[in-house]
Image (cartoon, rainbow, N blue to C red; front, side, top):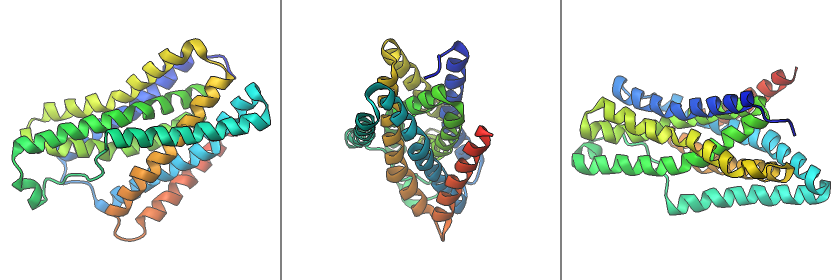
Length: 269
């Protein structure tokens, strides 16, 4: 384990903050464009999903295994990594059950969308913001701790999460902007949701700082790997498939894996 310096903390927090602020970009797309191309959106979502799955299973899971091996030895360390990974998937599944994340992006051009009252649509937007904010906390912790240990791992993960946050911003901004016609309020609601990621990073690090050890890092990375894989399979890939009109999903998935794989190779040269 490397010593944690102020520079490491600032870098990790900055990358996490940038990933969270991508949510605001979704609001900008709603207010100043005709809407994203569905096929491009499908490719982007699948790209992010492929990147998250690849970096989680090849790098973050490995970090967990290495840390646990230092604490408990290889055999028990491998078992601990597996349990942490499964616990991560279970934890985010529980969050999803308690606070369901809206998987459908509302389209202001949809006639059914326009038939609803503005007051009801505003409530839908606020509920979407609340649900997405709840899901952003573990994402922020994942980005922060991955970057804290190794920026070569954290930066690609943050990039994948940033892509994922753009359509989340759209799903918040579309109903809020349609109901209120207030650009400032729309951006503000998306900003609050995006800031949940750096807040999750700060809270997570503050809570765990007194206990940081190989076993704690192993637990955190195992949980992160499970959370990221679950989010990719539960949210990104199904959403990508909905928007697809061909093979965009599989092309995006494999491209995301390939780009992250090559970037990790380049970081090590």
